[in-house]
Image (tube, rainbow, N blue to C red; front, side, top):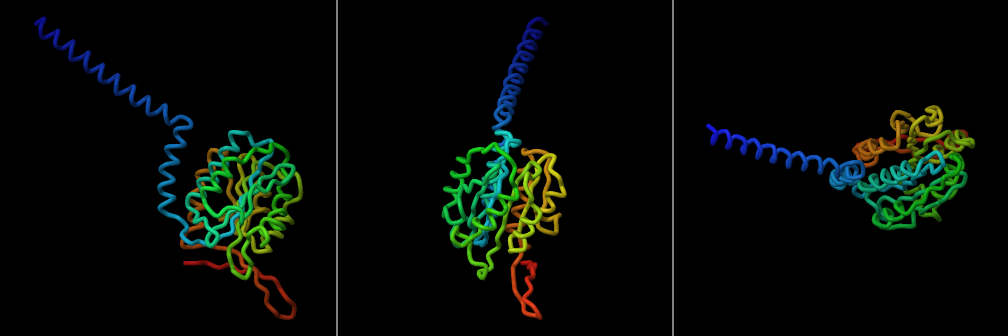
Length: 268
């Protein structure tokens, strides 16, 4: 009886030893995932999916406009950079396909790089990672005006309008503009630029709608915090790479007067 009891004790001890080892392994894996490891592991999975669904040969002139005001905390600013890096994963970067420019703004505008600066995705990624937080005001209108006048000029790498290459702004902001924005954004859209407006936190929705293109449900987005921006990645992949892509094209027709019209084109 005592021998049997002794064997049972050994079996129970071995069980708890094995259970403890397994539990430690699980905890170790979970620890690697929090908080930074979690993003990196998920990013690896996302990267694989995005690379398999690249915008092959998609011709776009895309300019990111990033709010770098003091209300954007350093951690949040890094989240925005990660969002840009994720978007880059599915873009076909080359002079003949997608060209990318980047502007950040606070009280002033800083043109990080233009549409003609980089020819390779790796170079753009390095430039995004090196971008430093401005931590000043929120001059959103000034940034959009800069994009219209300079970033989308042919001298800075934008392709001529006659080539019908979609011109796109993707703007991320977390606050109310400290300058007029409605008229400037309207001017940008009327010039043929499609604007995606992404608001973070307590951004005024009417302000976002005054910036983004119509229909607003397709071009205006609002997330609760910067950690949620990455949830928009698949939506933008569908819009930029999918079977249906909508963009504005300026055209002039002669009736009694020369009228500027906006044509909405769908690719199926």
